[in-house]
Image 1: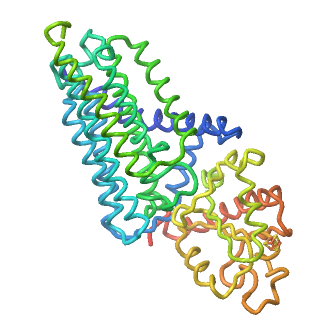
Image 2 (image 1 turned 120 degrees about the horizontal axis):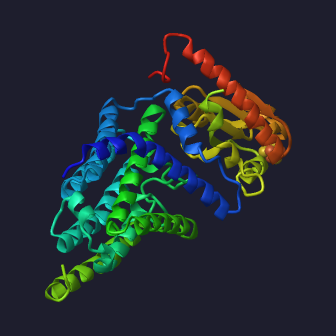
Image 3 (image 1 turned 135 degrees about the vertical axis):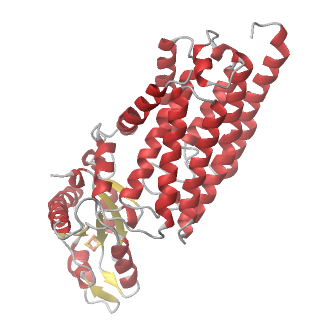
Length: 288
Length: 152
Ligand code: SF4
C-alpha cells in the first residue's frame, strides 16, 4: 500500500536530517584529521549563505536543469518512502543525475565539462549495482514494491550479503567520498576545481546541495531496506555504514575513473551477481 | 549577523613575490590553526567564493588574471591582501615587472601586513573582512534587489 504521509514526511524532514548528517560528517572528518572542525550546523549556514549570494547565470538553461535535478531527486526519494516501485525510484533517481550532468554541460567551462564527463562515468559505474540490489530484493521478496519489501519478515541481509557489500561500495560513489569523488568533492582543492558544480553559484549551488541531502537520506533508507525485518538492526546498519564511509573517505586518496569503474563493475558487480546466482541455485532449498 | 559571516568561502590566489605568505595562508588550514572552525573553506573556485585572499604583488602577467577572478566572484565579496607585497608591492615594489599592491587593480577591503604575515594575523584579517562582507550585503539588499542576491 502506498503511504503518501511518509512521502510528505520525507519531503519536509529529509533536508534537516540530510543537513545534520552532513554536519556530523564534517565534524567527524575534522576529528579524524586532528582538527576541531566546524559547528554541527555548518551545512545549514553554508546553504543559508548561498541563498543570500548573487546568482551568476552562465546560461539560462542551468536554472531548468538544476531545478529538475532537485525535483527528480525529491520525487524519487518521496516515491521510495511512500513504498513505491523500486525500479521507478531508481529510474527517477538516474534521470535526476542526468539533469545534473546536462546542467554542467550547458556552460562552456572545461572544468564543468570534465566534471560532467566524470559524473557520467560514475553513473555508469554505480547504476548496474543499484539495479542488482533491486533485483536481489525482488528474488527474495517477490516484489519490487518498497512497502512489500518492508513488510517482508525475511532477513534480506542474510539472503543478500554480497549484494549488500556491493551496494556499500557504490554508496561511496554516490556519497561523493574518496576514492570515488571524481566529479566533485566536498573537500578543498580538486584538480578540476569543483567539477560538475564549478559553474553554479549562489542559490543554484544551494539547490544542488539540498538535492544532495535528499539523496543521502534516500540512500540511507536503501540500506535500511536490507534490515527491514528488524528496525533496530536497520538503524545500527545505517550508522555503521555511514561511519565506515567517513573512515574510507579519510583513509583513501582519490582514484582514477578506471579504478572507479573496475571497483564498481568487477568487484561490486561480481559480488552482487555471484550472490544472485547462489540465490537462484538454492531457490529450491532455502525458503524464498 | 546573517549566515554570510558564518560561512566565508575563500579563494586563495598567489600573485607573485616570494611565496612565503602563500605558505602561511595554507598553514591556516592545518590542524594547528584549523580555520574550518569558523566555517572557512578554501575553495578553488571563484564562483563559489566570498573572499579573495591574495598574497604577493601584482605583476604585469597576472593583472588580467586577478581582475578576471575578482569579476567572476558573486556579490557580496571582499578582498583581503595578505602580506606587505600584496598591500604595497613590498620589497619587490621597484622591480620592472611589478605593478604594485593588489589595490592597483581591484578594491581591497582588508590589508594584512607582515613579511610573511603570520597565520594568526591572516585569520584576524579574515575575521575583520567578515564585518565588511556584512556591510556590503546590507548595501546590496537596499536597492530593488531585495531577497536572494539578485541576478546578473
Ligand atoms: S610579504 Fe614577504 S613573505 Fe609575503 S610574499 Fe612578500 S616577500 Fe614573501
